[in-house]
Image: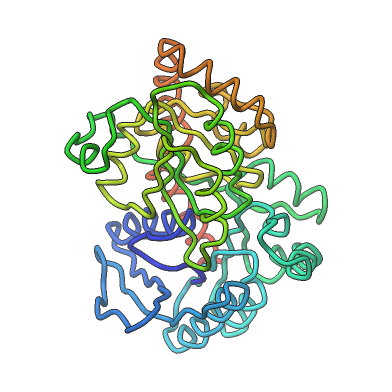
Length: 361
């Protein structure tokens, strides 16, 4: 509960839910995913062995997520679920309702949501003041970053479980017909993938790239379903070599990642970024801002720049574009790191053990 649902068409939580739910369903568990929708209600009732239920989305994103969590809980109370798993820090008030009704509850948190500059100050203050409640109301709480895990221990004396995101390794060459349709050349573009909101730091990347002398393109994949203001701002700052592709999913998205020369994550705020992990799993060397969550994700398998520093980002980009052998050497390390630490099968096993331990309490 609490995500936009599956198939994943929004962000990291949705990708996580899809990957884990599919694997749990294959193991014989009965899984239900609540999905948000706009317009007419979808008719699809299942996806890869997973039951789908639908809740309408509201236009205001600060009300939408708690609204859908609340409506989902009311519906779920009649279903006798063993486990109800919420995604998002604003879902904690609803975790107590099914817990009282004898269902075990889990909440997964995603970074420090109260630091999002796109949120109004009053929303950020409420999220910060109530942050520890997410470790009290559910039976268990998970985070996708060890840095975030340590922060909660330091500030609330409670230790959430560390359950990272994962990625699927695939080193096949991209389908170049996909690239040609986008007017892109294989290994001749820098890629960013994510929601177009200010905390993703795409404006740093757009500004830095505009100052570089290169025949490469910058490709921006993503959008914000709640508004276009930031995207319009980015388009005004971008140069003629910057390409905005909107939302891309499935195999086409994977081909775009495979065809990239370099993947860049310039964010001011992250948990463990699924888009970053996916790029690494598809053989891309990452260049990331040096916030702790990004550095934790790449380990020694990527490059970094001082977050928010356009000049440093420009210099790192220019160096990497001019030194392909350095980029190629890092690609294998990126794949090996995903294989070792971010395997979806291992992560699903970890989540399954958590669920079983709660049911057997």
